[in-house]
Length: 446
Image (cartoon, rainbow, N blue to C red; front, side, top):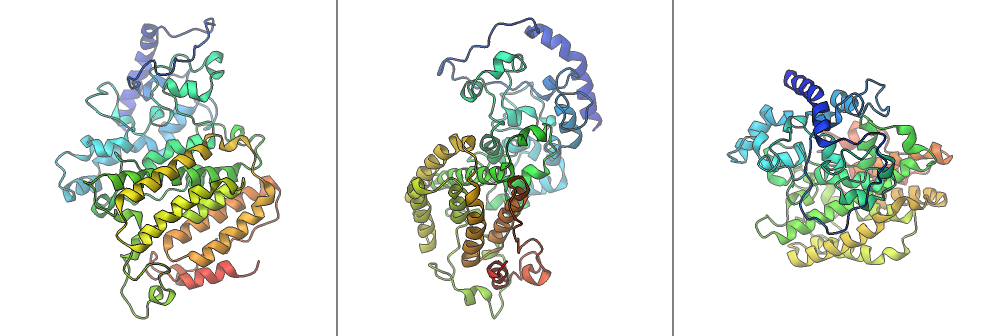
């Protein structure tokens, strides 16, 4: 903490000189910001560091958290992302590297730094960037080299998202864009893959639900501005999160399938408790049966039903091709020993369709007449398909999102039968999980 405060003091002293050297534009500078010419540069944008945002006149004002101008203050004092790098020095991180037989310490291991500092971070290529900042401004908003000195100007605000992206800034204004900023670390990518080996060594399993994470995020932006004119905001969060998570998961699945150096199938594609459970008789797994799988074949947790339910909020008539690809992936896993190339092809095709869906997701408000349908569909689908604790978690969070959306949409109260689960139903961390009891709850009348 002393090191962090020393660095902050150094930045506050040196920042005026840095801005003078850069030629920071003044309020009198009215020259419009020109949109970049597509393809004019292929060089990666450089990161400047969180200190470039730390001046009191920029984002380090001492205001109430969430106020405009207090973004840096809120992040460094409240946000656990600011300590993401520090955890790489903890005993658990040291133990993980030992278990994985990796020579570099975690705080120097590029595999760790991709998420505990910033996507694409490489100490050799970014020598002036402070990894001690952890997951800081540019980790989410994008490398600031080409937009730091202009992003406060009116001309910048007039640029569209594509032009800003070309200059390195990520889209965090739209909820679908915001969700896709989170997924590279909270779901994973080919270069930041929390696989079965990493989990076995001690890393927490990634289980991302955008609406829930968003609710607990210490906001360094005005929440009221997010919600203004959007009574469907909470449900927009959930739907954008479902689609962005599905897209990222399928990209990761495709990457695992095409990489012959990776184990196949990768165990994290499946429910942990499908293997890590007590062997006892009678067994509810044997009593429920295995659907189209035979005993011993691991279930794929592709979450097809919630993707369909999320898309249904705007009508799913044009999504038959997407569901066909998801069904084909599911069938391949259910049959056992899935063929890599076919899985990769279906996953890539599904990603393309999801990208098209996410592109302009929020331009049309959610159809309120679909909300009740969505509530019924989630309960019905879950009651018929639940076979594992992962599914219960996703369903519970989906129903919670609907309940959160109810006041803004002025809908009658929903019944969430999973709001409070008794210990006999979920047992010791899921080991004694009884899906029959969960299904009975979901099927009970309102």
